[in-house]
Image (cartoon, rainbow, N blue to C red):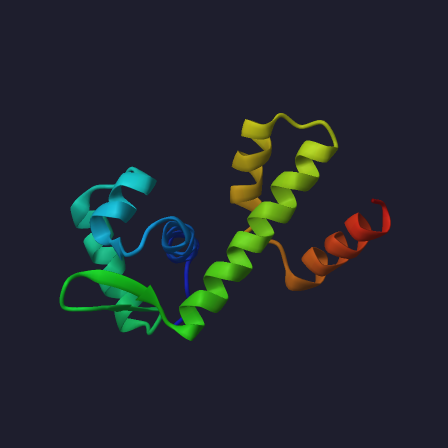
Length: 122
């Protein structure tokens, strides 16, 4: 199942919430992302059927290995891009917004080259 940008955003949000909370539920995702319960419920169903998350009988969401891989990859891109943009003088809010847009489209090749460039110029 090919994952769209919105799916990556949900997985990234679940990852971030799981680092803050003892358990993540759909309502936590709603509050964090500012989406309605029906929208999150639909997304959770899609991610579950795609094998990216598991939902237990109490409604707690956990990432599968594949879901964690996608979430961590997306979150790393977000952090590296937003930090880089800030380092070249972009305001933090703009850097975060722009990183969020780019993190889903940048190729692995370009992202790895950017990381090498940043590492070499520290």
